[in-house]
Length: 349
Image 1 (cartoon, rainbow, N blue to C red):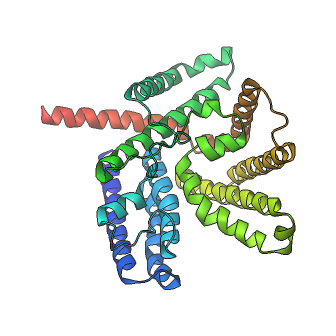
Image 2: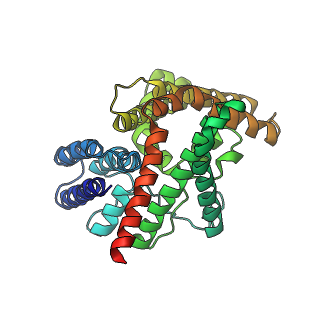
Image 3: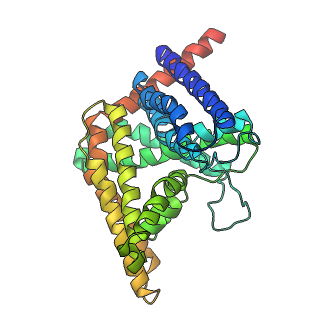
């Protein structure tokens, strides 16, 4: 654990140095291809950083925050777009580094009721308790054969959701302390999703949606609208943009899974996202055709949505994780962290 923490500290130092360099580039070079050229070394470094780590949690945090989101933010920054689009002459270095490296989205309109509300400490306390109970339940997995072995996958699904939300909440708290701004919640009660549009667009990891829209969805839609097909059927241009967005998301998940397992991609995750993109596109087309004339009962729509997400995740999303021993490595991380904390406390005493 001590060696891994040293490696992670080197990763953090590399990120700080690279983003400081990017900040200087933004101040001295105007937006455009020339700025992108000077940012390419940073993008290359960010792609390599997770390879220096072995902890599944630290790999996941670094790959998601740096090798995915930070690279996309810097690509947008190269052309004066995205969350870093404010001129560096009016943005402090601390703000630039925080917005670049942390998976956060500043809440520009705190009074907007349609945005996810900040959760209370009690809510997070309940989630921590559920996570602890979930981890403890793994100790009895040899009894699940009397129920069903797939119960382990349900636990793993809950485990991933709780871990992601709590880790991202901790990073958001750090960013809030550094920036002094209200931040939007990453997750918004996924279990209440009434459709795939609701699930992916408003409830699941809103920061990813916020970044993918300007870098994939909008350019694809503009290109599609510029063709004869797009001008005649503008809805088709939007559907093409949806599919392109899910394709890019799937490929980035393949990259993250490669960092986690260091094995050749199986493309299951890409197919998972393409399947959801296709179904979401169909849902958009059907809703436009019906124009609100017919709706499923809320209980039915929630059941169908969550059921579809879980079944397809069990089929295509989880197998690559299980093949890289994600569960065992996750539990090893927890054991190592507990041992490290005990060692530090005993040293202090």
